[in-house]
Image (cartoon, rainbow, N blue to C red; front, side, top):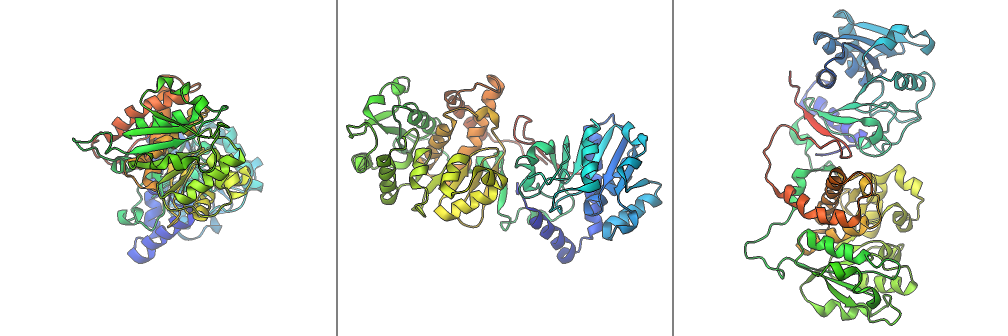
Length: 532
């Protein structure tokens, strides 16, 4: 499913209104109805509802929702920020219709003037501000958001929780803490980027009448990673396949401090289907971590210092012409000789390469990579690659992932909550919907790098391999959280869960009108078809 910025959504609305001829009032009617129907389905026992409306189009959705709730047998009171006389356009039209049909509208100009009856409702509908908000809330608007949150009642938000930036998920001063968000047409980016993701609750995507072709257009560069796309990406396997045809991965990593890292990556490559995996590592760690991983070849680094040196890899690259992907960095260490060796190898090889951990610091500031590179930084490594502080990177994860991809001409997997996959051309990016804090354990990044290399070895392109690995890695973490527990899951257990989630992802599934992502995921997405 596509995901959009505020400007992109506004352009889609404008196109529907001006080019296709769908009246804006009709789109607003559909949006408000979807919001009301979602509230009734989610809270069937709620009888009295307060709809808090703002002065713009979001408020217009609220007026329609209030009228629809009344038609569905609920009592709905509209609380409007400011005078109704100042409303314009479609919002003014629907406010007028609500009044003419007997709806109750209360104008709010002073929070102290709120009647006590407003604290006796069962549910609050937030229709204050949507995607058009650009500056922090202040004054009465900010106080109203604080008051809504303090009521201790369920809150349903129209399109976006008020106070959340639609593009970055940043909190603009104060923000509504919603239990349900009904977002219109397409999901907004800020619903999946923290802290917006934590304010959105369950997310429903409502169909409001925009043309389906426009909602799937290639001109929209952003998307959510979901099961259907991943199923299409995953490589098939011929009935006559053997280890030589399923791809060979060479992992270069390991040190005295991190002896297990390259072997976690190696096992992950095998678990996602690579035919053969070799690990080039210091001789002194060659056997201890590999003792329980009999399927991996081990190749000792020739340097007597037990670390990677410039020229060492010349002995390994010609070892097997079937090597199709390199995974560089897990546990290598930060010695200057290591960094120099990594830079030399990246400059020489024509193989697709995954750069992780210490390899990322080695190439930081070195300029564009050769085609086929994938970078997998966590926020600290991203700071080294871009020269920006972590706080600034986290404030706009998508924007900085795209800029880094352009700078290094490589696919960038910016790990975190959520993980972003960005491509160097076309501003294309994906927001992952799997994983979560269960993966906050040492070694899980090595697992991701290895799985990514395993998919590269099987013939997927860099962007395809990154998307498949990120989604399934998160799914494996979720399975572990359910079967083992939400904390204390080891990276090795995530590795072992990969074949199961891979098998499930390959299963054909019946098509339907929508898809549900389980609640342990980052979010839940449904497509609302306006069922009666």
